[in-house]
Image (cartoon, rainbow, N blue to C red; front, side, top):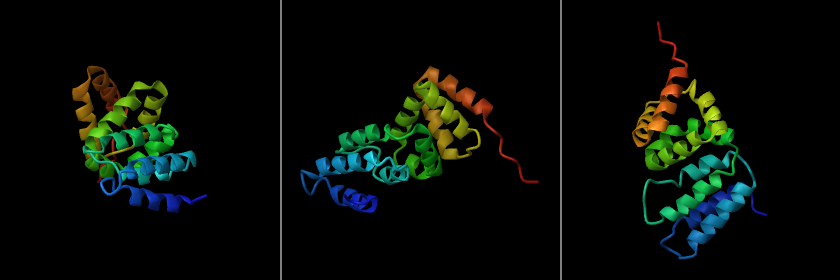
Length: 155
Protein backbone atom coordinates (compact mmCIF):
# COMPACT_ATOMS: atom_id res chain seq x y z
CA UNK A 1 0.00 0.00 0.00
CA UNK A 2 1.38 3.39 -1.00
CA UNK A 3 1.85 6.19 1.48
CA UNK A 4 -0.02 9.47 1.06
CA UNK A 5 3.23 11.15 -0.01
CA UNK A 6 3.67 8.55 -2.75
CA UNK A 7 0.07 9.07 -3.85
CA UNK A 8 0.61 12.85 -3.98
CA UNK A 9 3.64 12.22 -6.18
CA UNK A 10 1.48 10.04 -8.42
CA UNK A 11 -1.01 12.91 -8.78
CA UNK A 12 1.80 15.16 -9.97
CA UNK A 13 2.90 12.53 -12.46
CA UNK A 14 -0.59 11.78 -13.78
CA UNK A 15 -1.55 15.43 -14.02
CA UNK A 16 0.09 15.55 -17.46
CA UNK A 17 -3.17 14.53 -19.13
CA UNK A 18 -1.89 15.41 -22.61
CA UNK A 19 1.09 13.08 -22.39
CA UNK A 20 -0.81 9.86 -21.90
CA UNK A 21 -4.47 9.15 -22.55
CA UNK A 22 -4.60 6.96 -19.43
CA UNK A 23 -3.39 9.72 -17.11
CA UNK A 24 -6.91 11.08 -16.51
CA UNK A 25 -8.09 7.70 -15.30
CA UNK A 26 -4.97 7.15 -13.20
CA UNK A 27 -5.30 10.63 -11.72
CA UNK A 28 -8.90 9.97 -10.66
CA UNK A 29 -8.06 6.52 -9.30
CA UNK A 30 -5.33 8.14 -7.22
CA UNK A 31 -7.78 10.78 -6.00
CA UNK A 32 -10.15 8.00 -4.91
CA UNK A 33 -7.34 6.21 -3.08
CA UNK A 34 -6.34 9.41 -1.26
CA UNK A 35 -9.94 10.26 -0.33
CA UNK A 36 -10.48 6.73 1.02
CA UNK A 37 -7.80 7.49 3.66
CA UNK A 38 -10.02 10.32 5.05
CA UNK A 39 -6.98 12.46 5.90
CA UNK A 40 -8.15 16.08 5.90
CA UNK A 41 -4.64 17.33 5.12
CA UNK A 42 -5.16 15.92 1.62
CA UNK A 43 -7.80 18.55 0.86
CA UNK A 44 -5.12 21.21 0.45
CA UNK A 45 -3.24 18.95 -1.98
CA UNK A 46 -6.33 18.73 -4.19
CA UNK A 47 -6.71 22.52 -4.21
CA UNK A 48 -3.48 22.96 -6.12
CA UNK A 49 -4.91 21.07 -9.10
CA UNK A 50 -7.93 23.29 -9.57
CA UNK A 51 -8.13 25.83 -12.32
CA UNK A 52 -11.08 27.84 -13.55
CA UNK A 53 -11.43 26.32 -16.95
CA UNK A 54 -9.66 24.00 -19.29
CA UNK A 55 -9.88 21.05 -21.60
CA UNK A 56 -10.02 18.61 -18.70
CA UNK A 57 -12.78 20.28 -16.73
CA UNK A 58 -14.53 16.97 -16.30
CA UNK A 59 -11.58 15.61 -14.30
CA UNK A 60 -11.82 18.46 -11.82
CA UNK A 61 -15.58 18.04 -11.59
CA UNK A 62 -14.87 14.48 -10.44
CA UNK A 63 -12.37 15.77 -7.88
CA UNK A 64 -15.01 18.18 -6.56
CA UNK A 65 -17.39 15.24 -6.10
CA UNK A 66 -14.63 13.38 -4.25
CA UNK A 67 -14.13 16.35 -1.93
CA UNK A 68 -17.75 15.96 -0.80
CA UNK A 69 -16.68 12.79 1.03
CA UNK A 70 -14.69 14.82 3.53
CA UNK A 71 -16.28 16.18 6.67
CA UNK A 72 -17.70 19.65 5.95
CA UNK A 73 -15.97 21.15 8.97
CA UNK A 74 -12.59 19.78 7.85
CA UNK A 75 -13.15 21.00 4.32
CA UNK A 76 -14.07 24.51 5.44
CA UNK A 77 -11.15 24.70 7.88
CA UNK A 78 -8.71 23.87 5.10
CA UNK A 79 -10.51 26.14 2.65
CA UNK A 80 -10.42 29.16 4.94
CA UNK A 81 -6.74 28.53 5.76
CA UNK A 82 -5.93 28.51 2.04
CA UNK A 83 -8.67 30.72 0.66
CA UNK A 84 -6.48 33.26 -1.16
CA UNK A 85 -4.69 30.56 -3.10
CA UNK A 86 -7.79 28.59 -3.99
CA UNK A 87 -10.12 31.49 -4.79
CA UNK A 88 -7.56 33.28 -6.94
CA UNK A 89 -6.77 30.08 -8.83
CA UNK A 90 -10.32 28.77 -9.13
CA UNK A 91 -12.81 31.58 -8.56
CA UNK A 92 -15.62 29.93 -10.53
CA UNK A 93 -15.20 26.62 -8.75
CA UNK A 94 -15.16 28.44 -5.42
CA UNK A 95 -18.51 30.04 -6.30
CA UNK A 96 -19.93 26.62 -7.08
CA UNK A 97 -18.61 25.05 -3.87
CA UNK A 98 -20.01 27.78 -1.65
CA UNK A 99 -23.34 27.89 -3.44
CA UNK A 100 -23.70 24.16 -2.73
CA UNK A 101 -22.63 24.61 0.90
CA UNK A 102 -25.25 27.29 1.40
CA UNK A 103 -27.98 24.94 0.20
CA UNK A 104 -27.57 22.51 3.10
CA UNK A 105 -28.78 23.57 6.55
CA UNK A 106 -26.02 21.75 8.45
CA UNK A 107 -23.35 22.86 5.99
CA UNK A 108 -24.53 26.45 6.19
CA UNK A 109 -24.33 26.43 9.99
CA UNK A 110 -20.72 25.22 9.83
CA UNK A 111 -19.95 27.84 7.18
CA UNK A 112 -21.53 30.54 9.36
CA UNK A 113 -19.42 29.52 12.37
CA UNK A 114 -16.18 29.50 10.36
CA UNK A 115 -17.00 32.81 8.68
CA UNK A 116 -17.70 34.77 11.87
CA UNK A 117 -14.04 35.45 12.61
CA UNK A 118 -12.70 35.26 9.08
CA UNK A 119 -11.58 38.47 7.40
CA UNK A 120 -10.49 38.26 3.78
CA UNK A 121 -11.19 40.64 0.87
CA UNK A 122 -11.01 37.98 -1.81
CA UNK A 123 -13.58 35.85 0.02
CA UNK A 124 -15.85 38.88 0.29
CA UNK A 125 -15.60 39.29 -3.51
CA UNK A 126 -16.54 35.64 -3.85
CA UNK A 127 -19.62 36.21 -1.70
CA UNK A 128 -20.52 39.29 -3.77
CA UNK A 129 -20.34 37.16 -6.93
CA UNK A 130 -22.61 34.54 -5.35
CA UNK A 131 -25.10 37.30 -4.42
CA UNK A 132 -25.36 38.16 -8.10
CA UNK A 133 -26.29 34.58 -8.97
CA UNK A 134 -29.25 34.11 -6.69
CA UNK A 135 -31.58 36.21 -4.57
CA UNK A 136 -31.87 33.30 -2.10
CA UNK A 137 -28.11 33.23 -1.63
CA UNK A 138 -27.99 37.00 -1.41
CA UNK A 139 -30.28 36.90 1.63
CA UNK A 140 -28.18 34.15 3.23
CA UNK A 141 -25.00 36.14 2.64
CA UNK A 142 -26.54 39.31 4.05
CA UNK A 143 -27.43 37.33 7.17
CA UNK A 144 -23.91 35.88 7.32
CA UNK A 145 -22.39 39.32 7.12
CA UNK A 146 -24.76 40.72 9.75
CA UNK A 147 -23.55 38.12 12.27
CA UNK A 148 -19.88 38.56 11.45
CA UNK A 149 -17.51 39.53 14.25
CA UNK A 150 -15.98 42.91 13.43
CA UNK A 151 -12.18 43.00 13.52
CA UNK A 152 -10.72 44.97 16.40
CA UNK A 153 -9.27 48.25 15.22
CA UNK A 154 -5.75 49.20 16.10
CA UNK A 155 -5.55 52.13 18.51
